[in-house]
Length: 169
Image (cartoon, rainbow, N blue to C red):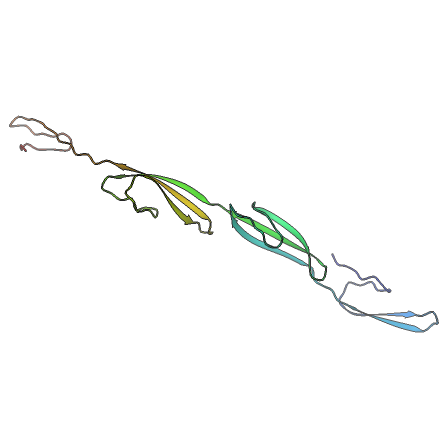
């Protein structure tokens, strides 16, 4: 929207020097020189990202949901300006890992280094810098030591529970 300067017989929106010749009441010519400055209006677009637990508070905005927002402002010279915000909300993550290890093992995946059963947490950051939490629910299977007492005849082979033997002992 171009503004038009329409005073003293002028009707222009172009910057520069403009002249208007008028006649005074006694018939003499009068010259009015208009030096018109055209100040710019602004139409800017900002693309910004925040984490899902944050609020974007720059340039007069105060929003925390993803979307496109506009802000009507005035420049230092009083000209209307429009700022458009395209806000992207990046997620934070809370993931739970269920894992099992044997009694004599150590769980060393996903940044953990533990052999203790129970819940363990790891605080990380996503690619966009948002806080993320990984919860490890670790179960430790017990170590069993059993003795098997069995009997076979002299010409037989014992082949149960993973054993294959014909020798006493």
